[in-house]
Length: 470
Image 1 (tube, rainbow, N blue to C red):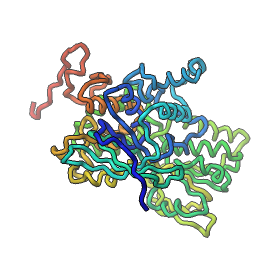
Image 2: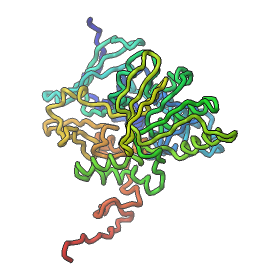
Image 3: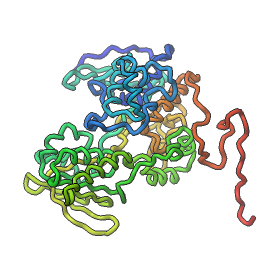
């Protein structure tokens, strides 16, 4: 079946963004006032949404409201959170509410407001491939325009000097549970789709939540609040050794600064890989307020004597799983510290098992000969978030939230979105439309710190390396 072509300009655009999540939405908002920059952004979805299945009532964003799309780079931007409130006549209510962390539903509504106001965002446009055209020194971006039902409506091609990939992450389902999610019948859903299936999960006799991070905690708390006392029939299990709080100390949070990102990027590849695995509590722990709310709810259910019918067990992984007839699920569990195994029969499962970066290989198959890779065959990414390509490629491909292995745990953090977007725009324009601070943390993460990080041009005090035998 042939489709009519979309008419795009034949001259190359300065910037084509692929994906419109918070990261590329931040980039689009900061690019908007740069009149000399011709930029367009594509996304296959019909419109902006941000984790709609997890917009549980009362759930908050885990970063302060200042970590909106623009403020930490340009507080005067018309696309700031505070300006959004002003346009809704909500500044005074927000002022008196004294909220530093806003609700997820509010953040989603704010981002949708930005997406509806910005030009150059093309929803229902599925990017199919990206190639380098050496004759024209441009990238060719092929896409399919989709109709309201998500079916192909027209084909198109645009040209770009620079690409920014912001395709985000996808829900991760452990291998033993993939067949259960795909099969009909007993509800086995990822937390990303929790609200869509909430009624059927609440109606199930026994419910198991798998995953000991923030999403698992929020789902467990929501289920607990809506189950009858004494008949909760809930299990909450996770691989981590404890239902551990997120690291929220002020110096600990400096791991989410540009200073730490630059430091991490300069480390050797094996060191970076070890650090990402070891730093899980910095970004995969649970908000202390959520933990307190769970404990309060459990405690409230002991006031008349007895214990709630809820089992919370950390340090457990699901080895295998299967269905019992068509009505129940059997999870085969392993306790990692005890080295013991058991079985759990349940009527519904919510998988709060996190997200993984969407692979770039399919989208960038046409660029594969040009992409330079590390020892684990992952794309190498430079300090300005560009893929390291063959020198014959004069254009650049930047990435957003696909650089965990090179830039560390701040890669998916909303607090660094505006800074990363500004870094990319400074690189693409060859100017500094957004001057960035040379220093952002009190912590010096390495022994040899650049002089530029010290205010007023003062030279930092150097630590003399220890030499064996002295």
